[in-house]
Image (tube, rainbow, N blue to C red):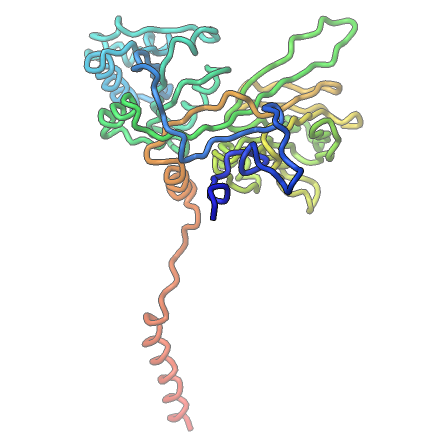
Length: 386
């Protein structure tokens, strides 16, 4: 067996970008035509220089997160000599203002304004304290390149937050020293184009990156949604039902799995299309290659408009003539693993979704005595009766 047979798959279209097929055929040598993906085992965090700045995002309206937050930022400032950024609203939190330890470091914290373009150039890595919503919020803040994200489980679900806070010093130190695996979680680039009207000024297109899913539904209307779905410019189907979910592999374990979709590991390059309560027995969820462009629009003969939301935010109405284009973004979210890509994902499936949890079947040896005694009792009773 030669090296070519042992080569691990690193491309979406072939085992290698230089793969040949027979004596003549080969993949076109064009970077735009070949979407290469990293071997998950090679996705390790590497710092080109020691990280100096960190953004700490905490779960809002949850006082139980405040003590770990104060403990973490104090340690980062005093022990690690790092510049710590927080949201401006954190400094205005009355519960934190009463904390004596927080008062000592309050003036050393840096803040930022929402929507600042230079935030991605100022932050070396991110620490999230809370549930999965904190990671989704971090993704929303960085609409282009995202620094590595280390997420601690202090919320209610914790599917995307693999770290426990008990030994945070050791775990953060390992990350700062570059001893960590990464999961590159793909995102979807969503663009809404509004129909131009003669009597109104055209509105600028909405351009958002989402980590979980974009949902198109019927909103408050009592009628079924009637949505046209195009893939690479070709009409694929019309969706009649409550709506449609377009999700990343990370989002496959969120709204999509509740609607009947399969669960996909976040390292798989794919886009999931899942109908919501379709008015058809044969409309099953499908998976298409990452990189294709989807176009979603309200069917011309639809009785009502549709509504669209992005990771549960920015909900807005889609009118007749409007269109939503969705494709894979070139900016993934580098999520730091507590163990590795495979272990973290299956642990979260078992812990958060209780995947394949059932009562274990007894071994035959454990049942042999019971079965034997039961059969004897039955025979004895028959003998006595005769």
